[in-house]
Length: 420
Ligand SMILES: NC(=O)c1ccc[n+]([C@@H]2O[C@H](COP(=O)([O-])OP(=O)(O)OC[C@H]3O[C@@H](n4cnc5c(N)ncnc54)[C@H](O)[C@@H]3O)[C@@H](O)[C@H]2O)c1
Image (tube, rainbow, N blue to C red; front, side, top):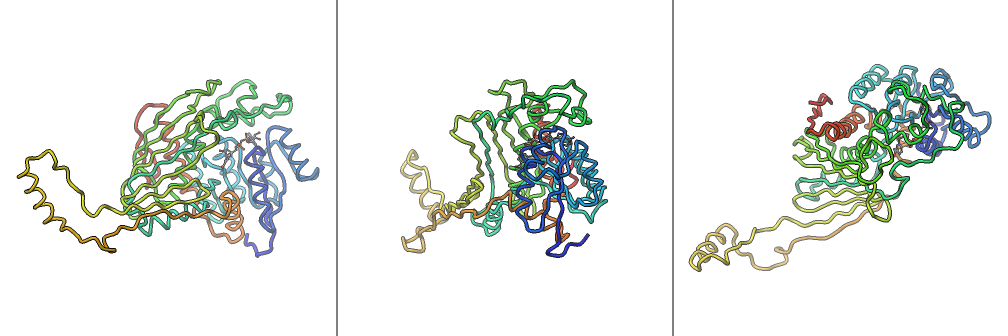
């Protein structure tokens, strides 16, 4: 389907929880976008859709009823992580354009299945909903890195710390939750069968069966931001450590995690190390998010809203530590040193240029990302956060989980997108 500039784009939502509702809100900010309906397995969320969008809005417990509608052009997949691959593949095969929330998949194998489905349905737009790909901050950092603003990149540190119960995924469980208004089997799908237990649905992130732990939920944002800024294809070695340090609420995933990742030299960047940290009991007053790109001649920091460049050019000479040598040795050293580094007269030219520059983003990354999806649907030009990009970000993040749970270093092949 080719859209004219003024054509309608009719979207539907699969998974009408927190993010799905946010995605629809942002999609509707784009001219010509209409909302057709939603699928969810908890009736109260469908009731809410009708409250917000009108009693005539189509709702169903079975997402396949959304996919079989000819008046739906594109779907937003915002279910728990374990359902992303299956629903996205079904949607592509049904001829829909797909905006799939991050992480694209729960397992690396699923990533290859989504890539194959996207290739088979190449005329369909498939885009991953990891909005740091559209963050102005990372675009700015990309141009700064390319211009050599911090010399040669050697280390990137990133952190996403929280200090609230909601930040630690203790979401509300509705008092009416029961098998009558929740389609438990459709939620469980291919995950291990379990008796009805609402906490596992409403706090699904806390369980490996449905979520992807801190790594898939949050590291994947950090990896997406890093890949957007450095244009890297991916790392080669991944190590993660951490534990359940505070939120001992029955979860089977860590609440504190460090990931250390090695990026090999590529055409676009030198070899560097990437360190990621998530702490759900950080003792900070609020959520803290940030990146620090360290190079040989400066640093770039971002809190996503703003970017700060701090230049510290390379020293012109290394200096010396000769005070403990005998006098003759000191003199010999200085003579040799000055041959290598002739003394320079102090002039304007010998002054080094140091200092800070700051840029502030004027727009919201999530809104821009959804606008990029609508633009891709309208123009049929794929966005760079396609299935391959999605797996290139999700793969290393998911391997951080493998590293943590299996207590080993994991290898990743960024060309084949397979674990070594
Ligand atoms: N891009 C971001 O910054 C961002 C932020 C938050 C969440 N997310 C992603 O969005 C997704 C949803 O997260 P959330 O916080 O909205 O969770 P949520 O629990 O609020 O919403 C998930 C919804 O999916 C529904 N659901 C479960 N099984 C279903 C099925 N078989 N068919 C249809 N609906 C089903 C649930 O009932 C629920 O309403 C996750 O993959 C998460 O990683 C992304």
